[in-house]
Image (spheres, one colour):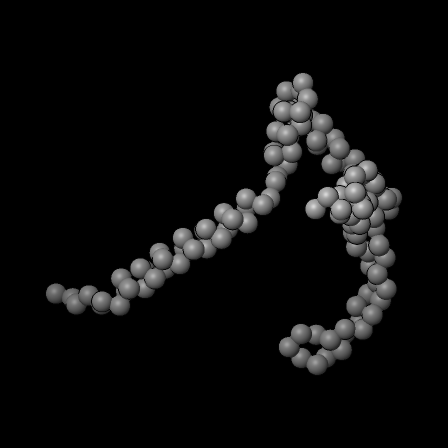
Length: 122
């Protein structure tokens, strides 16, 4: 006959207690987000379009925005803000964990500037 360890169930109990805390924090963070499906539902509610038609509209707008930014153009959404591509200069950095100096090449990044209308309404 083998002897069972009493420590194993204690570890499981600790793991099950920690999981709901993480899940609750995750649910709270998710409550502050809206996904594409939420935008589709909002468009469908505010217009006479079906959900399928609203999905096509939202998809077309997002694809147009992404295509314009990839071409290097700025996209302005009145009352929301402006998406633009910003150039970054080459620079010298330090590798984390060591003091080794590394050269970071020039590149591009996506920038977003919030409109003053939206900023003042927050």
